[in-house]
Length: 498
Image (cartoon, rainbow, N blue to C red; front, side):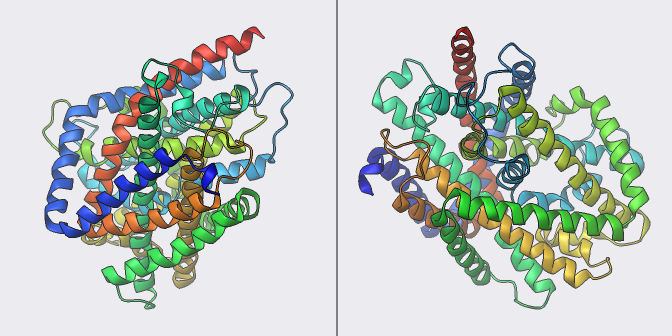
């Protein structure tokens, strides 16, 4: 078991995370202030780079899909996909989105109604409502999935076509990776980005589950109860990751997407159906029309923190999740052509997000504007109760809240087990078979570490600590993705010759 673990990558990553947890828990007040200052500093200094990188990766995926490389298959031209389209899509959706979809599905459009940056659009309430959905689509749509697609292709071509290990350093051919120190540094950063990115989602999910249980009068909100929730679900994630890809993660992902469809249909049918349909059509048209302006908005002439709190946080979150999701989707995309892969990874999940956010966001905006329900006040007091305040206005509200908690739970577990699986693959020895499951010990350690880190971040500063951890690991990783993309292009040119 130990021989399959790369000791330097594994123990350096584990030591850094352990030191961070220990320092945070022993310096809670100072850590909270430091997280806030660090978040602002990184956003102010690197914001332009994050925006530029996100747009660059989207353009790169469009080019690859329709280039002469589109026919190349992950695994070679004789490779056959391991999973059906339904299972493949379910795993992409569950692993790539996670808890944030439920945490921000109602909250973000409502918050944007009253906090859009000056100059971002017209001032009428109707224009702000439409603009709030545009920014929501921007944060959850094409840009983020293009990041996943680039990293996924880099992993897939490197591992399956060139027979290299499932490591970020293996995607890069440079002077820096020609020595062991450079390779280990890149892989450790990838592991840290994965662990901190997923821990952010787990922290959000635990907070939201606690709020939901309070709404159902099943549990009183407290930090202790939130930690209890993290503990219970970490154990469930541990069980799932021990079962492996086919028996655990695949089955849970399929259950997850089925439950999501049920909740989506319930909100659509029981809510203002015509308003939702009108809103989605208008939102997509407006998003397409204003796409370039939205995608390049940097808030250059305003002195507010809106961009730092939203767009830069989201893009950094996508970057932080990219080694995790990229490796995972590469693992489940064996046999797909580059064109099929990009259309499946970028377009299909983005359309699913537009339908989800369009349904929940527009139904929430309808409540806010036309029914007298003051969702914004409830959300400003506690963002984690947004979904439950929204569902409280529906028939069968208790049942819908219970269903949403179950979905958050399954998202929680799929994120935890997928993250542990990927982190263990990143820290496996170079002679491990990339088609087999990674060492059990590594999977157990990373599953437990995710839960501990999420608890430490919540203790050390709550949401701001979660956001800071994403920015610290995600923004620098964008540079590594750019270098890997350049290397990918060179490798595809060589493969296309044969």
